[in-house]
Structure formats: structure tokens, C-alpha cells
Image (cartoon, rainbow, N blue to C red; front, side, top):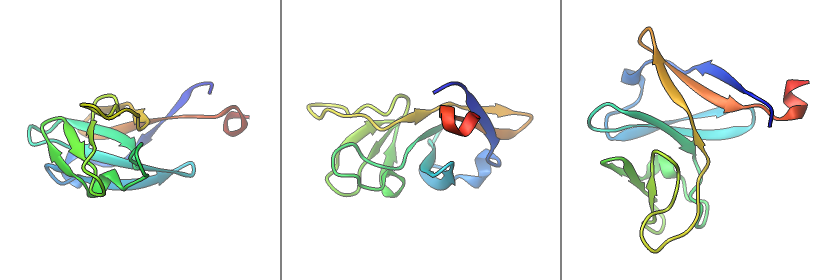
Length: 112
């Protein structure tokens, strides 16, 4: 990967509190999560265990439980917690002028 492209993906209000919405960017399905205290995170919408849709999981604190087998994934870095091992790709999210911006790394092919 070379660098990232920042996408405007709306406002925090576009993401349900303690829930998620999904986006498809550059062929990737990304889940954008909003916690009860309004922090926003983004992960690949695929559990590292069996590929379950993390966007359909239950958000608690800064974690999400996969709806298929209850693996708990940390929203900050995508790492499975507890005895489980694996990682969903995490994407940077920032707020600028009230708008959410999502960084998606570009592959060399996409950048050329």
C-alpha cells in the first residue's frame, strides 16, 4: 500500500448510536460503528473467525460481538479479545467540520 484516500461518509448522526452502517469503498465492505458515547470507529465488515458481518453485532463499550459465534472484536484496532485470535482490518476515522472522514488505504494499482 502507498497512501490513503480520505472519504466523506456523512455525519455521526448517520450512524445509529450503539450500532453500525456499512459502506462499500474500493471493493471493500466497511462497517462504521458509533458507541454510546459517540466515538466512531471503522472496521472491515468481516469477523476474523468465520467472516460474520460485524455490522450486525452488538456494540458494547468499544467492542462489538460478532452475531455468528460471539467473538468480541475491539473497535479501536480490530483485534479479537479474550482467548480468540485474529484481526479485522481497522480504518482511521476523523471528524472535520462536523463531517466523518474515513481513510481507506490505496493499493499501488489503484494509485496509478
